[in-house]
Image (cartoon, rainbow, N blue to C red):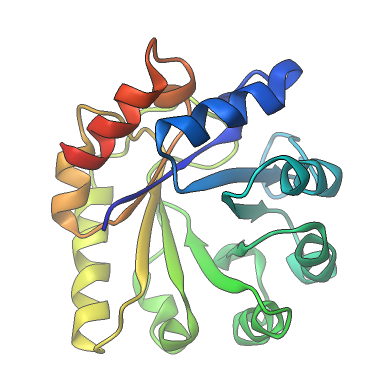
Length: 215
């Protein structure tokens, strides 16, 4: 099943609740919350108060992507705030096994994101513990970037690894995902698509989400 996780990074934050209602009515499965600290990535976005606010206005699962240094410091707080899925960047974790176990201890789904140049083999030993792997198909930090073409081969390789290990780990892709390239991304093995600009800047959010699922 293909699931859509619209990224709030591209929404109108002055009308946050209204924007969330639009994606709910449009058939989205998750709300993707990009948390940036201005250190791990060259941008600052939202934090714990926004996650708390979202939890109070939507029943959609909160898909929280921590693009921050030393994420262990904040995992418990984001879990308490209402995150349902907590994704950490492999590149930001010194002890990835420990970090993944910590997320699980909070009763949350655990995911790990890989930057474009990071080899999927770094996940070989922790993959059985993960609910999802996020392939970043742009360099993280800013919305509206173009999809990096070699990401497709990376998705295929990850899917092959998951199948070989007999796992059912979700593959999420984030960065430059559009109606025009979603077919290629899904064919490679991805089943969770993150889209920001493609959804929130479209004229018909419901129709765009439908196309992302069905194309």
